[in-house]
Length: 138
Ligand SMILES: [Cu+2]
Image 1 (cartoon, rainbow, N blue to C red):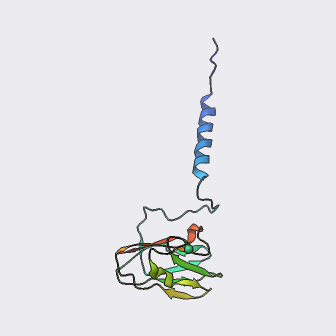
Image 2 (cartoon, rainbow, N blue to C red):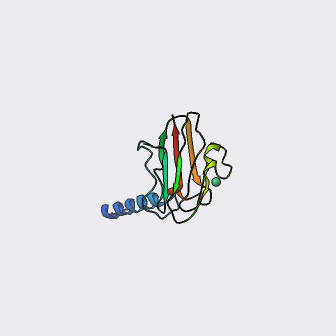
Image 3 (cartoon, rainbow, N blue to C red):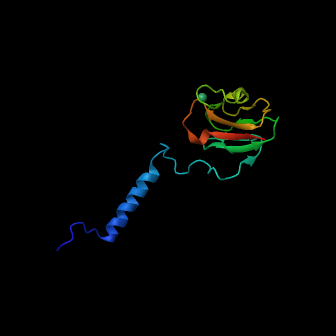
């Protein structure tokens, strides 16, 4: 008797590897190899976010209740920083005071007076994950 479904172990391992690779590369849509900051990393304690051609940095910050965040545009293009959700911008209206920053410009948010988490994005590049971030107010 000849086995009908004999698959060499090596071929099976190669197939599993191919499936794993295919699964890992879907989602995101961006071809940038370095993804967003892992959610397990602690937020940076700072009130300043700098934007360059590489995106916003740091993108995950923690600030004290009642303080503001300064956004600095060090990129060569304009950025339009706004509160989530896009396009309504209703979660944290204080963030919308930053708005359009020409290259070299900087502007503060309003006072962030209640403990919560505010997420931001670039309204002109809403799907660019390098320009998405989180401000934890506590
Ligand atoms: Cu938007």
